[in-house]
Image (cartoon, rainbow, N blue to C red; front, side):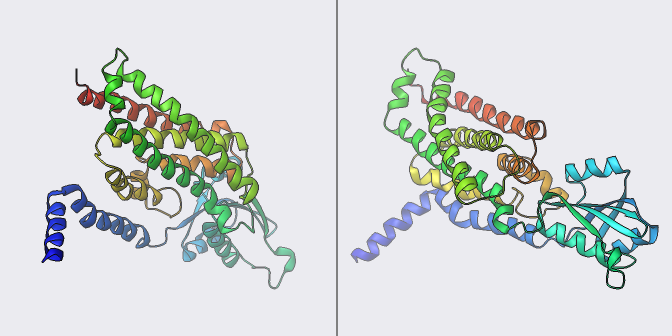
Length: 338
């Protein structure tokens, strides 16, 4: 009887806890739906820039699920830099000269395989016509960890800063500290900025530690500036910090903060560059901060990009942070008791 009474009490609590029920029932379906749409996608054609090659060569590429696009030499270089194509092809006297973006090993392998098989002579009968391959970005022996490392740095920092920030801000509210502050002449925006600055210092130390550990201890490939890696990582940490602070206003316990993880953090992983996405899903990913953080880290670490190349994603992540801070200032109104 006592066991049945205890079980009944637990079920009664769950029945009235709509947020927990939603987490148990709908969050798994949301994650599985995202996985379904991402993994069920057919292979997207790989785009290759053709600078100088016979028309029949470019047409044969279509048989290997590769789209050939005609470019001038300068246009092909810009398209390769922007990620619009995976490789560029230039032929002289029957020999193919191929430049490859090796920052995505899977797409690079598919492009090279198609280019070699579609060529007039794959190099078996004429060794002197064997294609000359140059890796503009990445490397031929790029490991999986080098490829995923840039994305994982952004995700790990984002995840832990979000978790710690959400719980810490919640404790400030549940212990009465926030209410006491609101009873003073201090303005709401000053409270938000003060908290962000204080927790931001800890987030900066964490970002530095994780970036140093991945690059100098684990040996993740870095072709750009370590300072830019740290800058991007810190911008992602700041976005996670302000998002965690914002969502903590909607939680009443640490468990409810954790409930936001499968709804807010995990879905962003699928849009951070680990998977090849359709245009529609890519457009959806642009609404998520981690998309820009991971893209900027990949640009710096694998392509050697500078500040000009990552200025746009950095601006977007800072915009997310400012937006979350502004919303947090507005939501603090409901906690003022005087």
